[in-house]
Length: 421
Ligand code: ATP
Ligand code: MG
Image 1: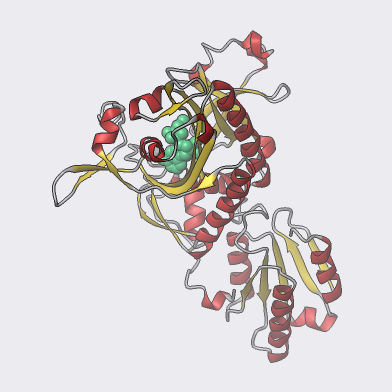
Image 2: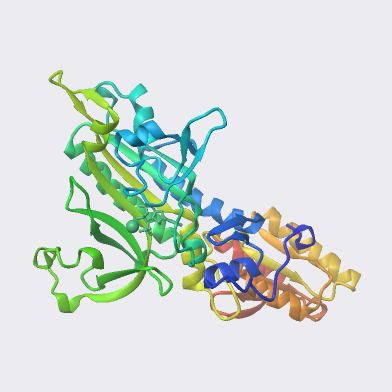
């Protein structure tokens, strides 16, 4: 895309009331717009990052055989009353509103109840099980503190999945498969080695749930981690965890600031029983379905990636989620010959399937470089009059700052050799 056609502008300063580094940088670089605390519009570049994160999650969810759908944001009070979760004292982050036609409704903070209820029309017998569904959907939560930018929104995007199984064994099989799928997602997002499957508070049916906690200074959680043994425990459950059974001692665990990027949960048969989701088993008995739920914070993830990888100059995206692979920065645009050359390279890169943001604006070199660093695409290719004379471009790797001077052939060979870049 030609940057001259991108309506978003970079900004020197973030809004004074924005205290989170991730939101400050994303706002300054033009990825998001702050509507109010914890509420951000996704602008074109921001939307592209979100779509890329979603696509990675989608591919891994498909891999474990789940079906995608979209549930609604307007929800029935009566349904949540059945599971005792309409009450504001039980769920303290509800947004609720009223229909003009009369009657109270809820705005989706979760979709566990509506999706379980919907499934009543599709699950009758053990032959219909196991089944799992997922969606990418907006969640609305009346969070008291929304000071972490994209990491704690009042309106945010979550991937939520739900498994429906006949037996505990079937449930465990899907639960374990989802752990593998989740870790693949986090690896692809560049945070695999910093993300831990963490013991966390369970519910009526299970002692523990599992959170996926990514080491992050700006995270709101504290996780006790043994990097060596790969054991991680949320501080909330540290006292009740049998450390001996996990093969660690208290001394080996290091209190670490982390962000919860995902969460998987076993409901047993309780949720289905409350909602009335039953099936007929092999012996003809009608029993509630065994359920699990599986979340990933899509927009929180975006914030975490910014927090983890940004440097003093701006954002540094992992290649897997960057909106474009290359920032083609054309200098000396007053020179027709240089401009034509840059246009040609832009066309050739696109032909090769490389995604390019082409800074064709009439601006000073210093301004273009500062914007490019702020926006944080993996590679910057600089086209200039000086380079034109030497027959080379300057190629800068954003993450490392490495600078290479390549000819056009070397440049294309480089991209051919790394089809993923
Ligand atoms: P937290 O403990 O951080 O409040 P949660 O336990 O309420 O989160 P879930 O309901 O399990 O979260 O949601 C699944 C995932 O959605 C979380 O693991 C997190 O990544 C993300 N998430 C939860 N709340 C928010 C929020 N307010 N803003 C952005 N992402 C969120
Ligand atoms: Mg949590």
